[in-house]
Length: 253
Ligand code: ADP
Ligand code: MG
Image (spheres, protein in one colour):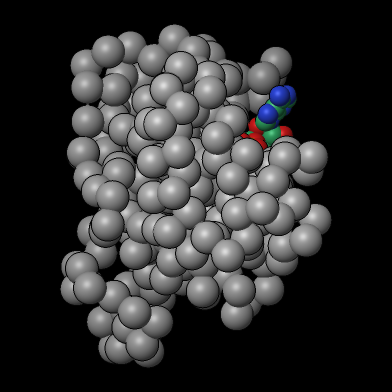
């Protein structure tokens, strides 16, 4: 279980996060939504161990998070794949750091290429791929290290709507196949409700937990679920929460 307990973070006088507590059970898919500036990236960077909290703590299965570690794999919006490495060499990168044998590396690379549908592009360079495929490479590279938790910071934010929806279906499939715990932040409410089993709403200024919504949609979801009454009601509820907490901040300005 991943637990953030009373986490706070300030940058000078700016309170980016205030008293944030979030719990992600093993194998769950939790999405955090909030307006731009609500502290989503700060929250994820703290879990990744790249930013230290100024108060509170993060633990994974009871062990305190004090820095980056292979049990937490991070994928950010720009993907950040190595442009000079082929797809398979990008996936191999983390495995070399883990010190796996050549045979183990090959088995993992083959499996994750297949799982992410990248097998036909294994010898391609990132510049030969589309934006969506490059994000698949970034996700495959993180997954190949078999982290306990996959951390995603608006990974589909730069993609067009059709590609984004393909990637959402892809990510949901990968999550179901691998059983990896996922914590994803996004400003896209529809994306959060489609992907998550739980949606945490962040309020802005200071960034704090405004609401925690359970998504009681079928586990087996495809894009058609987005047109069901249950989905639309949940989406409207979360949108209202985001808007309400954004409104309160605007009222103060
Ligand atoms: P989000 O990802 O939701 O857009 P961020 O976590 O990036 O929000 O930022 C939350 C707030 O903290 C913003 O007001 C931002 O300007 C501030 N902030 C984030 N990182 C830093 C930093 N390294 N130095 C100063 N301010 C920062
Ligand atoms: Mg951000």
